[in-house]
Length: 262
Image (cartoon, rainbow, N blue to C red; front, side, top):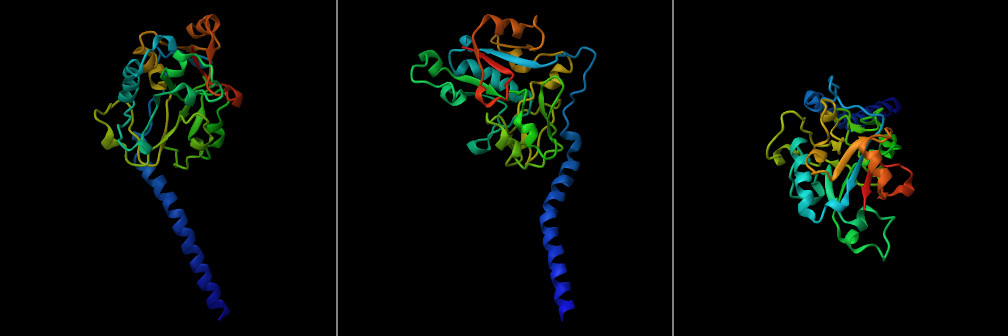
């Protein structure tokens, strides 16, 4: 009798464990099927742009309204196959506009300049020098390169969203559904993602690898600069030297690589 009971409990335990593990294996199996489609090509060509710590400077003085930001956002969305999803909670965002009081929560004060207070700001992944998202990821799907860019390996992402919880800037999006039906014109040169994968801005690492600037920089008419923060002669360093700039939530100590001239 005892042996029968022990056998029943053993079988029940194994069955329960199987139910728990099966979705995990299914996730990996699904990932394997799409592995080739989930890998952007970041391999550096002969004309690749290189730097020790890439950074960005956004000159907010050159923007007047949301209409000025739209071409920049649209260009990023287009080349990265970012879907246009109507359900707000399902939105995928790499670069988007936000209000000052939301973007710079620890800089808000009741006497803030009126222009700044009502100006739409471009926000994106800050490619922090000390990125908490990298520490939070259990599969190393998100990692920091030697040049400071924080990247995602979509193939390794298991959709746990720990990175999203760790990011204090809300710079990551989760694919709650298959994003592909929401892509109007698919760019064959960049992989689409699948349901259950986190994604974010990659500083256009795929373009740097072939000698091109990030797309947002290219279409910004000079409002966005990109370069090596470690190079004192770079454009970004000169802008930082000559202008007063702010960063998002500096008190957190993540050391964002995106600066704003205000």
